Length: 309
Image 1: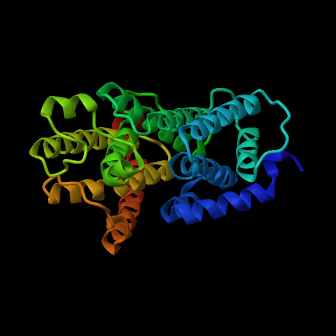
Image 2: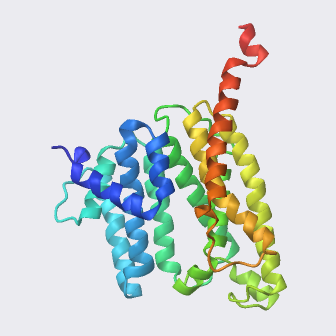
Image 3: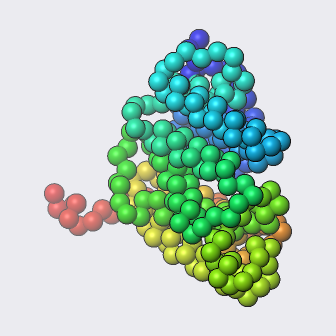
């Protein structure tokens, strides 16, 4: 059996994904290309694993840095097609995923390398403040990683347009993600507000009730809203319905968080349960229906210039 067809890694990855994110699991089942579903689960599962090692299981900074160095070398070796041995099951998941990569400089490689850059940055930033430039790089790199991965796993082979708004919905999602996880990230030693802003306003990273902290949250929410709007314009232009639906579903996960932050007067909560509420799932279902109808109408009534040909 070739590595890429290993049923054991497919089953393990499927299990990790279902345990980690039920929405991600069913999104894959519904919209990912059928012949890429196993690799989609592998991609999610591998990074879920290394993220947990960095955030939870590593007992020291040295252990964290050594682990990330080993994984970086593993990625390079696998893309160089070097033979490997003595891998743990999660590393075998990565081996099979890279073995199945469809072409040079693919969306999958962009997903892997950019997501790993984020994990590596997290390994070194724990316990330290970031600056605005680093924060902007962080959310932009995450947005590029997730978007390129989405466009690889759905409609693989389609030449998606590379326009200025291609990554904006993904970036907006991760601005929202960092806001949502503020309190837990603070506990874990990851601080998602620029150090220079804290210094300029004379506040601490835990001062969530301070007007200056709320003002910063308000600005981030407004930025995410604007990016979601422009990013959805990109999604609307795509020729594949499944890609539109996946992009809108992914955005909806975080837009409900922004709704709650606004309703709370920009005071960050301990937890956000909106994604588990029935109204959120009804919104997701309704999005799927309306996007399908609009997509069908667009195909039935192409622009006049296209019809005249």
